[in-house]
Image 1 (cartoon, rainbow, N blue to C red):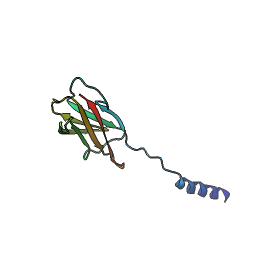
Image 2: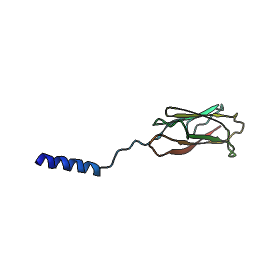
Image 3: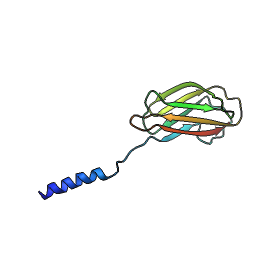
Image 4: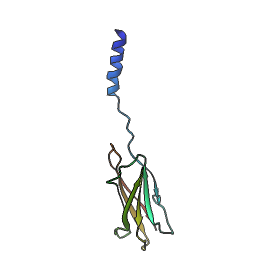
Length: 116
């Protein structure tokens, strides 16, 4: 009987403890945040820590004037998203914005810049 009470107490307490959650996070990008490039990239990629859904992910790149320079050709593979770029002609700060969707997790949204 005493064992039963201990078991019930342990089970009850386990519901009060916070659950550990593995949230999707950005693992890497190419180019990296803050990179200074002398050669224009032909694509931008971001890699999350969780496998991504095949649809709904977003990755965009804008030039120093705020004009889109990505070509819209997004491809998803496991935890990685890649978008092609149009030829970069303006020198300055480029902004990469992303939304990564992993099953059962909140969308991972963010942005970073690189200099070309």
